[in-house]
Image: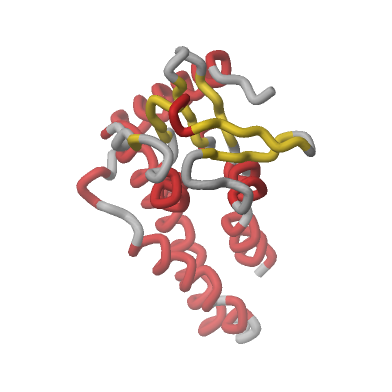
Length: 181
């Protein structure tokens, strides 16, 4: 039971990474990497021609005419912010390798939740009825995650390992190119 509850809590917590950032490419060649939290804090002060974000208790402005385009490295961030960011600049479509990485990651996460759900229901029905109290949690997580997966992009085996390695290297290069100051 502890393993099932722990898995549910861990899968509900998201640790932000450089991949989750919004990358704003300026005409002068500079890249500004903004976290979702920085974007949310400054969003209310943004206007039609000025994008505002808050970093280290200071508000920073980027004028619309300075922005060449916006690029995302995360499907989750793209889904949550692209509608708002389109007001400021052209949004580049997500690369196919990003789509493959995130849909595979979602698929694998949903399969893990599905395994815990089956285990909780089985133990609840066979051994300990108290497990029936927590069984709906991993079940609902598995169903919710499976609905968001586009199976056309799901990778398996060696392709998945190669995709993970490439994604890790890409994010490492992005950190060096566009550090958060």
